[in-house]
Image (cartoon, rainbow, N blue to C red; front, top):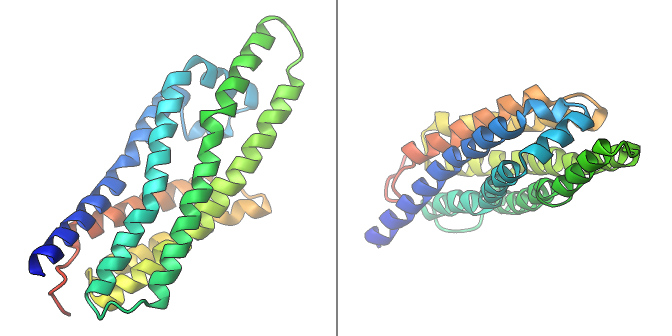
Length: 237
């Protein structure tokens, strides 16, 4: 039993470490390719040209981002399971809420990311070709705006701003109750979750770019903190 508990703790810590670090891969790749995240505020013609000129790197960056987003659910699930394993393994409301919210978050974020893997590169190529031949591009810009608005609402507002925040707050409370991490780490998770919610102000038309950057940075620090401080199942506090 002790061996299994140690192995489970190791898996959870490694998963938290990877989730905390992998995010910086798409940040670096997309930053070099399309000046992300600043490019999210670029005018459509400028961004479409950047995507067309750096299509392979853009897709690579978003593939890694997709993997990171999909991994959010199993990582949160591991946190919840570790919290339960330190008590009596009875399902608690906070763990159940965390699992449901994390699953919805992963799905919503993936939908938002997929626009950059399929329709956007094709649209960018068509836009550049049309511009070179002096053909009208207004329709393509309108399509870009529509796809970007939809993808942003689903991925950033719903996926990150609402459901990821619920999942992080709920599992942080579960970890704190179980004594799975130091109190300050659990509290950092609550802060990360609350800061993610603040990025949902885009619903009322406020630019949340800066808030999203700050909140995601706090989130990554929380993943790393959990990785280095997660307590053994046998330990009680």
